[in-house]
Amino acid sequence: MRVAGLISGTSLDAIDVAIVEFLPAGDDTLELAVMAAGEEPWPDDLRRRVSGWLADPSAAVPLRELAATDMEVGHAFADALVAVAGRNTIDVECLDLVVSHGQTVHHHVDANGTAIASLQIGQPAVLAERLGCQVVADLRPRDIAAGGQGAPLVALFDALLFTDPEHDVAVLNLGGIANLTVVPAGRADAAVAWDTGPANAVLDALARRIGRDHDADGALAMAGTADESLLDDLLADPWFAMPPPKSTGRERFGDAYAARLVERVPAAPDQFATATALSARSIARSLGEHAPAWPARLWTGGGGTRNPALMRALGDALRAAAPPGASAPELLGVDDAGIPSGSKEAIAFAFLGHETLHGRTSSLAGATGARHPSVLGAIWPAGHGQGARRHDGGEALPGGLVRHLRVRGAQARGVNGS
Image (cartoon, rainbow, N blue to C red; front, side):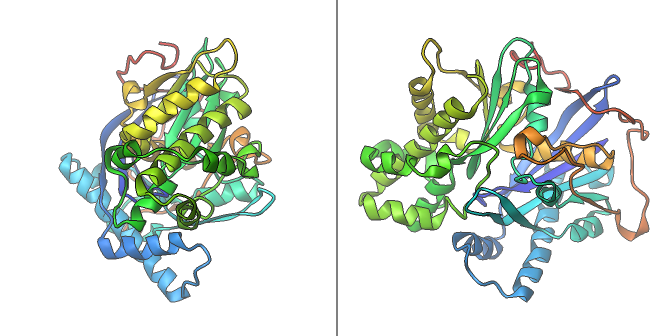
């Protein structure tokens, strides 16, 4: 089955696209092949508008503007898919399914850490109409309705793909918000996951204050010195100590948070150095305090992996946080497993939607805190009254749950015990 995954993260830096082929490879194994992966920039005006909403979670947005923007984002996502498919000489007519996470504009967690609601825009009906393909979208609310956080949702994908029979492993996504999946040795079903706090969100908010999109190559952070006193204060925030399951977003770690940091640190390079250290140390501390076991390997993906200052700070923080007698986990990029780093989330959501279409649960209660796993999202039928296109003969693991996931042809060390 050929599935496209679409997502734009909390950094709003691009629309990520992945086109993946899924094939059954046994009674409980699904094999994937990445046919295409890439990203497309947001239309400037649309990005500024949505970014403005994210910068001020309390802003009042007229309902007609919200409704119209929802439709516009749907068109932007359709355009992004068509562009990436075209660059890779893939006809969108070959797609069986499009899975769209959309763009989160609000993730509401109350003071007690209970997720109340999560709102994504990017109207799925536009995708179904434009692409003539069935669409799975709106994946987070079902988990929240079941008492979960609605995030992080990629834990099952991480657990199935990166489980190791002999070693505890962890998978880290460095998007606007950092999230971890920890997989006990040989126990993909026992994986736990949670948001650890900011990865790029505060850094990007600082960059916007000086007219930039981000700290390119971590140059500003490398030129500055972290304010250790302020770091101690920031890391004392009770949210960091709160045990999983937990989730967060730019509502907590966004522009207002960056503004408070700037009040304490006058020089821009020192601001970036402090925010970089905050991201790295909060990840390492969360791994040490909340993981069921210290992992032997840490797989990394997401836009933050392109920031050498953040990756260096993360390595330092992991060495400092290692329990007595243990060493820092081996850092590996998900690219080494055959998964393009910048497209991992889009690939993961393609998998989630594939499972939804087959009526299978794909959330992990140990990741989100829900009462039970759920079949996520809703299905929009193909446009123009067409029947669903299927290239798998309808035979993709028709009864049982997927218990193993692998990349076709990948022989990466450390993946599924290799």
